[in-house]
Image 1 (cartoon, rainbow, N blue to C red):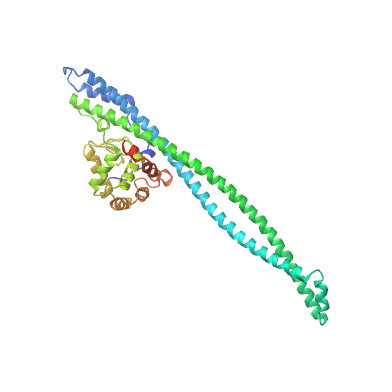
Image 2: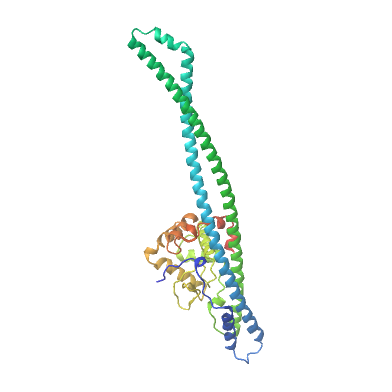
Length: 370
């Protein structure tokens, strides 16, 4: 049973050095009888392709690390944006409450002002002259003082709330500026991530072409080679269709987007293994130090991937991924299930696959064509 692995973008790749890979090419050539006529050019070309494949894989490794960093940056910016939006909403609610309180106090102050105008400046004397006794006079004067005191307190409260409103509005303005800047930064980060992912896809396509040429030469020379050299594979879109078909899941647009985004998020150069599973299989070889495999064929790679998902320990959380695909759920839901599983739990700031889905949805054909 395969163990869960981390995304290859987060792994430390352990491939043979360039010289060793070239030596592998030489050893393959030496396996062919020296008398084999007309094969010198094929041997030379195979050695060149062996070197090119090693260089392509190194380049893909470097870009994977760049994609990881961009993914984390994107996640951080999105978290900051969401936090700012929450603060904006809270501040807007506070502003509404403060406005309501201010209007209430202003109404009370206006009512007091109207009352004071109606009584006029002689109100204290009128109250005193209307008293029937000293006790009544004292009560009347105390009542007038309380009105005057309430007037002063209300006026002061109005002033305080006016200042409070001004402070909230200033804070709201600052938060709005921060949110606008974060939106621009997020847009730039999303664009950079998309550009880098597509560039990575181009490198993977170049690698597939080199492997295809190497496979043809290996057949011509009648030798055996590691699938790491000859595993050309198919496009992300076609592999997604094959995987969904073998799973018995609908080949619907959301499922295709989810799987292609998953392949792009992995960005692995492992042969016939775009989701970078570690499950062992007859004829498989190790692609890197964490056990991601090179498989001998497309069918073997799909079978190993399905076995990982279907036969994996329930604790790995692959069940919700399969259920989401079976239901043709929104790609975002499937991506969330993938991120919550042990395939790459919490990778890329918790946005593993999730941050790629919108990019693939917006430009499916380009991502699927890899």
